[in-house]
Image (cartoon, rainbow, N blue to C red):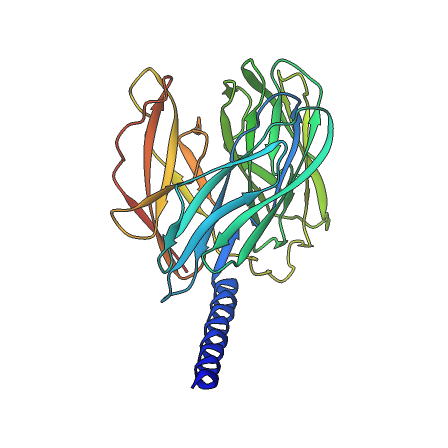
Length: 329
């Protein structure tokens, strides 16, 4: 009898382990973090850069996965997010914010990620560099734009967040493009960023007949580190008459709204949900100054629901705006 009992227990343990291994494999194929890595670029030592939102999505249409905890390396990177454990229902997401505060100069790297209830881990590599400086400082995340494949018949769109990491306001004074095929929205001479404020710049590349595959966007400003040079590249640039190259991902969602009539409003928060009426998840960890936002983190064959709030100088936030939706083909 003892032998039979031991065998039954052993069989039960093996069955449990197999179930856990199967669950981990299922989580590995269903959970995804976006972005999958973060390069903060240069940041003045002793200051904190713009928070970067990382979204963990359960892409499984039927199963729920529980995020048990968030792990991270110590040092200049910090992570904040919702209370855990948190169950992610099918097609549901959670968002955390990651910040970079270098204590000195030089390059640094780190890691953070999510651990599920059964021990499966999703890691997000982190990197950045501390620089010396004071006053207004302009930084970009990402600082390099990869347009993928583009042609005259199928231009490509990328976005970046410009952040005032200093202690004084920054005024944009000029924009220079190395190639006439580049156009931008959300960044223009005369735009002013208060300390800690972020503006989203959308860059569109439509190549001409010269076959250029790399270049720069130079942003002149009153920042102490001006000019800020953003590098861009394209995997394949077809000129006029070249076969159109299909975009590498789903089309982004271009949102715009009317400005608030309140004099003390300093920016807007943009939220996105997967169900009409919410819940909604914050897309802009720092309020955007403009009255438009480009959401490039969408996935195909899905409908997204958006609302906007206004934020005043004291951090008070308005109620949600009316909801709009976008269906991605």
